Length: 370
Image 1: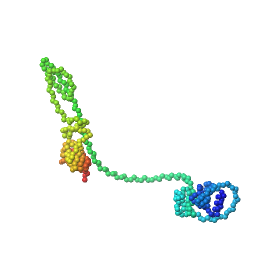
Image 2: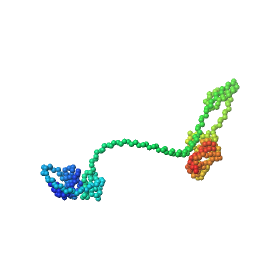
Image 3: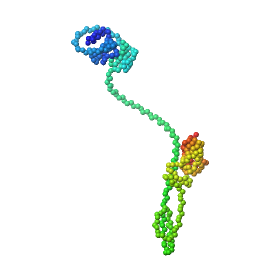
Image 4: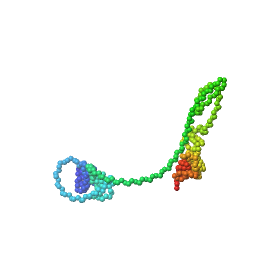
């Protein structure tokens, strides 16, 4: 306590007039020898001993002594120099971020404290500047809802153009002819009566019944042997001209357009014809055939006048080489096409269908019309 009084006496005559007070510890990075700091939240006072020693802490809450005599009223002190006003420039995160060359009176907020650049050209923490959070104000009245006018409906957009019709698909292949039904069974004629046996002489043989000849009847009863004459054997009918059954399991018999021959066809399969360096002439024998023409030069597909192909007869062609296929009709033959009558490129497939007498439709990958 005596040490504290000695300091108070030493600096009473104006050696140091700096004074600080706030909640918490003094600002250790500031102050000079002889400065006083009073902590407002505890009975502590700090005295600055100099640059090397820093702040000294004294508890001023000693025993309460007896009241001293009322001292004389001192004379009125001199009016101090005018203080420096401050201008809060903004906020910085820490002391190191304060400007190095500020104007006197500039101040910045660090956390909740205000730091002022004073007349001594030092940054001084003058204490807490940010106040406590205020009470939340009451909710204001809800404003009335505004009624906006509904805008008029816009004009209807233009209808888009109708797209062109796509290419018609290729007609499916004509199915092969179904199996021939089994032959009907005819009635077996009744057996003729047995002739009478004459005494001593030969009896007459009864005449044969006139029933229809069908499938073989059951074996008749063996009659008593008579002495009648044996009838002559009938003629053996000619065998039909059917192809061999061997190797044609689940096949279908197909009659050609000329109704002259029959052949076996397997369901789900079509005939394939490979042609090299030659054209093709449409004929009844090629109906339903897939024809692959491979040639380095162009080839012609001829359609004769009045060719014997039934309505709906279909031929499919594929350009297997660089040579294009040109379709040509005889006199009076009409070939209907959306484009030209020439295949477009190697790999193009074109289908030809008979739709009337000397009238054919062609469709597929054809060169476009000019």
